[in-house]
Image (cartoon, rainbow, N blue to C red; front, top):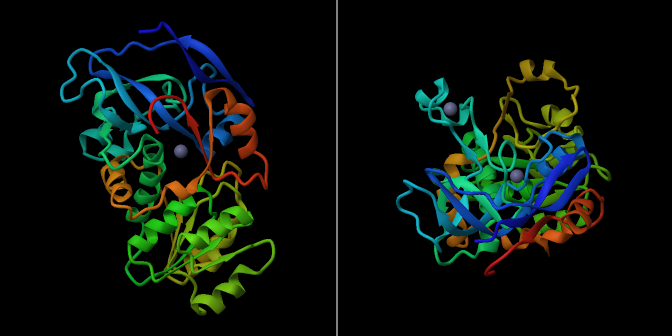
Length: 345
Ligand SMILES: [Zn+2]
Ligand SMILES: [Zn+2]
């Protein structure tokens, strides 16, 4: 085994460096993964802009790879197993964990956020965070399991019922996956808002009844035309831009739900009087720990299209120039950028 490897390291605000770092050693209960593919997430771009990560962190929480080494005491996993890694791992010991609310864990390990992640040749993870990839899924598709699990978790937590009218605001990767999950869950109509033409076209291809450009038309008026005057039963906000958070409260039907999946770091002013007068529900969700097995099955069964979301495949050396810069440039036609690090497709 080599001593050094290449990794994308966060150095400070706006600074990602592909550097040589030591290959991590798996400890008891851990395995070493040789990473095949790792996606760049919108939250990575946001965190790098705002400096939300600890300097020195190896980024990357959307990845798939092959077990390269098994640490002491690990059972059920062997060198060569193809896996995806659940990025949100509960501690198992805190109050919420002991009560069974694992998503409420106070000591949550987030691979690629609080601990070194998978935008590297190798990553060390606890074995209980692993999920096996079935034969029908490539490592390339495997890198999309985590974002699909995030979308699925949101749709499962939301109040969506078969026959509901849905609005998805933002057609980035999470929005495009939420659109597909809402259709799987029985949504009657899913309308999407998106300003970027590449993403808008993709949303239409993946099943949106209509895609509205909020910069060109009044979304409220268009929704009345498309789904009637009541408004959508559920609105999923899948963008970090502040405007949808403000607008959703007035677009959703009375008694409806605004469900937040995006990370908006700016404070947003919204009409909370409408929340009371219209008896609205506003709810959010983080990550998709429990939904990994279902996400894997949906990809294997071909019921969710993740391939169409992959707009670019780049190398680890291109992470900054072809990855982060592209995702920070409007009109760059980037949707999901995957870093191909090693091994099979
Ligand atoms: Zn992510
Ligand atoms: Zn815990």
